Structures are given as structure tokens and as C-alpha cells.
Image (tube, rainbow, N blue to C red; front, side, top):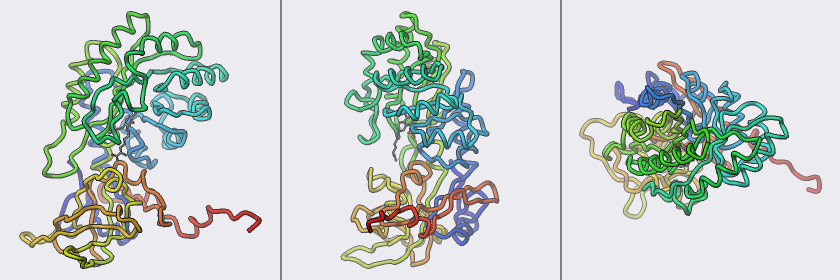
Amino acid sequence: MDHFLYRDGVLHAEDVPVAEIAAKVGTPFYCYSTATLLRHFRLFDEALAGMDHLVCYAMKAASNQAILKTLAQAGAGMDVVSGGEYARAIAAGVPGDKIVFSGVGKTHEEIRAALSTGIRQFNVESEPEMEVINEVALSLGKVAPITVRVNPDVDAKTHAKIATGKSENKFGIPIARAREVYARAAALPGLKVVGIDVHIGSQLTDLDPFRLAYRKVADLTETLRSDGHDIHRLDLGGGLGIPYTRSNEAPPLPVEYGAMIKEELGHLGCEIEIEPGRLIAGNAGIMVSKVIYVKSGEGRDFLILDGAMNDLLRPAMYEAHHDIVSVKEPAPGIEQQPYDIVGPVCETGDTFAKERMMAPLAPGDLVAFRSAGAYGAVMASEYNTRPLIPEVLVHEDQFAVIRERPTFDEMLKRDTIPEWL
Ligand code: LLP
């Protein structure tokens, strides 16, 4: 459920008419709903009630500091995957002991920064990384809390580009080698083993792959404990999918996911961490764009928008579907027509949808891409020297620009011309 609904014939973000925001900030832009973000965070938090737990929002999904602050104030921790994300989380007021650091390529500098300011744990992805964390910790006179991310070799049954838990993927350490790797970790004085980490992929629409992976983690917990390791924390990753279309069968709910976690892992008495990103931010955001032209092509009409693949990459990159709705509510019973919906970027891949049935639209009309809150703004680029589009956060009847659209001057100033030119 989200808070983008038609009221009085126009799409609202909570209590704000979307067209009012467009008039103020121009198009295209991203718009997030505070109530939806909080609702989704709380669904997870409540789903794990009764277990010692922390919901660490995977901020790669949407990392504006205003979003982080909104979630942190509700009690969320953060899952970060780079020094930049770590810096954002700290700047948004998240304490270090609520930040977990994931990712296969943590650099010396990133590890040093996190250890110096404070970190809940590093989720270690390889043996060489483990050695480096140990060295950096010792050089700072600290002990680094770690989990090892295990790769359970489970098929997440999702898009190949976002599956991470199969043995051919670059992530984690093969679960079969875990005992050996934990033995090495225990021998390194700069490390303190606190638990196990697993993450098998994103946009999972079935609980079975999670269940399979978590069973393997439960077995491993017992094995490692019998080897003498203090396994008291399980980081179960993110990945629960969201409905991208109204018609699709809905993926499992957080409450069902939480019940499964209790069933599979509750007996171990571990503190549970989860790292959801998409489910918290996805349906809490829309991208609003304006029709520039309607062009009649060979046997089809193109709707040419001012938003493009550089603003919302998911359709071009993953053939992802986003519902696209008119900001002005179509009159009931109005006949729909098929459109190919495209952006102005000079690539055929800059296509958001083909033969999408829509009520007739005209230049100047506004449309909203639904479910664009996660992996939307964060994956945008300035391809074709198109400025990164603004982000707006709505809270009840108020809205604020939380990232401005840069001017061309600001963009151009970032280039420097060598003196020989
Ligand atoms: N934890 C780790 C270690 C991850 O790698 C990810 C996502 C998450 C948590 C959060 O997963 P979520 O709950 O959001 O599914 N750009 C792609 C998605 C990439 C996901 C990468 N890792 C997309 O637009 O579909």
C-alpha cells in the first residue's frame, strides 16, 4: 500500500497534488512519501517483533539524507556498500553502531573511515578482505566486528542481474568453506566474529529460496558454535520483492517473511538483522515526467517524455516494468490507446514501455512512473548532459525539495580544461 492516490481527479502524494509540485520544481522529478517509507519500515520492524532485531535499510535503494533521516528517526539502522554511503549515513545522524558495511570491494580507506567513526559490523566477502580489515584494525588499535557473508548456492529465482546467492556469483564465501574461513578469522587479533551474513538476491517473489538459504545458515550456526565461535548475530540480507503491477500476484508480505524467519532461526537465540531496500523505498516513490510530443509513427504512437533512461534506468537495464499513470485521473470509461513511451535520449534503449494502454495524452500532460522510489534516483546519470533530476519529499500536506536540480553552469564547472588547451 502506498500514499499516491487520486483525489478530486488528480494524483496526490499524501495530501499534496502532484501537479502542484511539478509547477514549483519543474519536470522530471522524483517524489517520495514519508508515510509510505515509514509504513514499510514498520512492517518489517513489527514482523520481527519478539526477536532481538535491527532493520538495516539497504540505502543503495534510495540514499538521499532526508530519506535516511526519516527512517533513522523511526529506529532504522543502515546497510552501506561504499565509503560514500557510509558518509551519507553518518551525515544523516545514523550512529556508527547501527551501520553494517557490505560489498565485495571495500578499500583500505573505506575500512579505516568506518572503523575510526564507528561500525556495527563488516560483512566480509572474501579472505583477502578479511586480512585487510584485520591489518587496518590493528593499525588503529581497534578490533573490527565481522560476519562472513556465505554464499549458500541457492537459486533466488529472480532476474539474473540481481541474483547473488549462486556459486557462480561474485558474492560471499562458498558455504562449504565457511568453517575454514571462520577458523582463520578467529586467529586474527584485529577481528571479532559476531555472526553470519547471507544475501541471495533482490526482487524475490517467493519465500522458498530464502527458507532454503536460512536453513543452511541455521545449520552453519550450530556447526560454528560447536567449533567454539560466538555466533550471536545473523544478518539475513534484503531482497523481498514488491508488486510492480496492480494485476500481478502480490509477493509475500513482510509479516509472512518475518514468521518464516522465526520458524527457521528463532530457536538459535540470535539477534536478527535484515537489509531490505526495495520494499521500503520502491513503492514510496514516483518519477513525474511531462509529455513533450506525441508523435505518430509507423503503426504506433510515441509518447515522448522529458524523463529518460538516464533518470530511470531500470526499464533499459532490466526490461523492468513500471506502471505509468496520468497525473490527471482519466475520465471513467474513456477509451485507452497503445503508446510506445520513450525519452529524449539518443538510444533505442531509451524506451520505458511498448504498446502501453493509456487514456489519450497530449503535450504538457504529466505522467507518474509508479514504484520508482528504489533504484531510481540513485542509478541516474547525466548521460546526454541531462541534469540529475530533483528529489522531493512529501510529509502530509507539506513538501520539500531534498535535492535540487543542478544548473547547466554547475554541471559545466565540474570539467577542468588542461592548460595546454
Ligand atoms: N543487502 C545486500 C548485500 C544487497 O546487495 C542488496 C541489494 C540489498 C541488501 C537490498 O536488496 P533489496 O531489499 O533492495 O532487494 N538495481 C537493481 C537492484 C540491485 C540490488 C542489489 N543489492 C534493480 O533496480 O532492480
